[in-house]
Image (cartoon, rainbow, N blue to C red; front, side):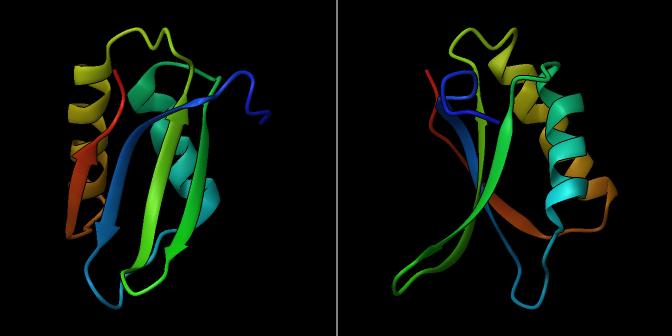
Amino acid sequence: MSRSTADVRWLTFRLKNGQSIGPDQLKDGWVLASESRQCDVRRERIEGAGVVYALYGPPDLPSPRRAELRMREFLMRSGYTFTMGTLGH
């Protein structure tokens, strides 16, 4: 996905030590949660802080709060333990 269509980092989250999620599963969950196909996911390593998963989408995401709640529900239903932060508008 090009950065021009998914250029806002809307959410980030960390998983409990020992857990990971594959890019396809994560993207599928984010597409459903964000109600947009114009999205991207990345696994980013932050020096000294480990791994963070970053969820990107268009600046005009239909409902950011609903997307966050749906993404939290997706992760919990999938059995993940996580902490999440909101970065978008």
